[in-house]
Length: 99
Image (cartoon, rainbow, N blue to C red; front, side, top):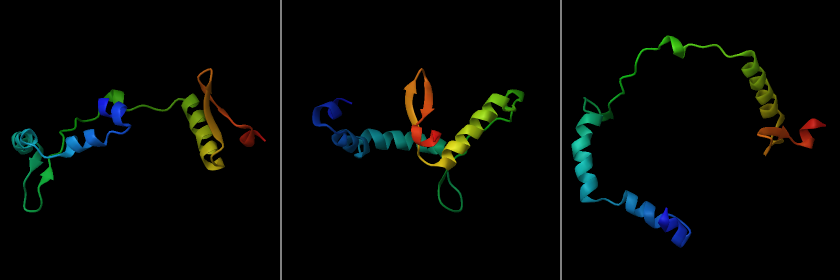
């Protein structure tokens, strides 16, 4: 964002993003009939037409994935002593968790 480089924050840009304008009203008026659904209660967004599950969507986790999951569970329950400083693309534990 150019404004962020100039002033150090993006507040002016965010202000313009949410400020009402004729263009935004026009876009909302043209698109809301396709996105919103009126009923007896409040107006609700229309649900997306999700497809049924395909065979490729059903899969089993590999043994290696289950081992990684177990390692993460141990690290998560052990507290915040895991370091994510990358050495050769892998996360290494700090000395506090090794002792």
